[in-house]
Amino acid sequence: MAERATLREVGPRDGIQMAKRFLETERKLEWALRLKAAGVKEIELTSFVPPKVVPQFADADQLAQGLPRLEGVVASALIPNLKGAERALAAGFTHVNYVLSISEAHSQSNVRRSTDEAIAEFERIAALKDTEQGRGMVLGVGLATAFGCTLQGYVAPERVWQVARHVAAGGADELIVADTVGYANPAQVKMLLPPIIEIAAGRRVICHFHDTRGLGLANVAAALETGIRVFDSSLAGLGGCPFAPGATGNINTEDTAYMLESMGFSTGIDIEALLNLRRDVENWLGDERYSGAIARAGLPKTFEAAE
Ligand code: COA
Ligand code: ZN
Image (cartoon, rainbow, N blue to C red; front, top):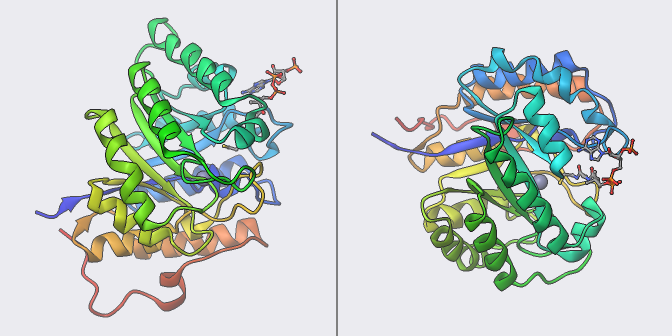
């Protein structure tokens, strides 16, 4: 039996938050349903941010009405604050991903709060678990700009570990270590992650890499060596943070699935089905930056999925 690895598809969230065209709710749902059919087990479906901040997610409540059709998939929503958490729970999500920037400059740009203020907001969100409304909530915390920041530059690993320790003790169920702007390199990944895995003490640690400078899959390989088995990725390599200058695409789901399967990690994903889906997504979205080596070159004749 092959060891398992999990891809959390963030295309319908990270992937389109900078897209020029508004994608109709029906299309977003079709995207998610076809991901499910292709074997994707976890999807970050939308974001509960004010529509005037990111108009693409104005339909988050409507999209949530499709959740019953996604049964069997872990569908989550991004939240930037307590209000986002309350909206996500009211809409029917149990899994939420709270973004907390380690870089002060990115935190101010993204959520108009210092990192310490964002930590205080985390505590208010975690407190929801003790309420009727928040019962069963699974709270992921995204440690954004953990590897560096386009606005501020250096981000101290000690600060990443300190915040990780704080949120793990305060009710985070999962830690998502995010290279929001594509600054990470494999040596840095191997240095930063082991203490986080230790701090997480059995909670899932997920890596969220962007391929901005071409090191996305190298970073995945490095993270695998540290024991990480869950990765965020985006169909066609779409994505990027509108509040981090120069940010570009997430690691590409098709290429990441290909690498994992080739290395003997079973993802359960049908790569050909993803390639069909991406052709449609490209038509729906029009002019965007699409990446991917497998979409360009095809799977090798020798490819065998891990079983
Ligand atoms: N969903 C909907 N409306 C929200 C909201 C949410 N999650 N959070 C706040 N609002 C509303 C408030 O109710 C208020 O409405 P009003 O003007 O009608 O009273 C208004 O937005 C301003 O609220 P405030 O708390 O002052 O927020 P802000 O203007 O300081 O913005 C954030 C803070 C966090 C809401 C905003 O910066 C944000 O959405 N950032 C996330 C950006 C993002 O998506 N980044 C990419 C992913 S990492
Ligand atoms: Zn991202």
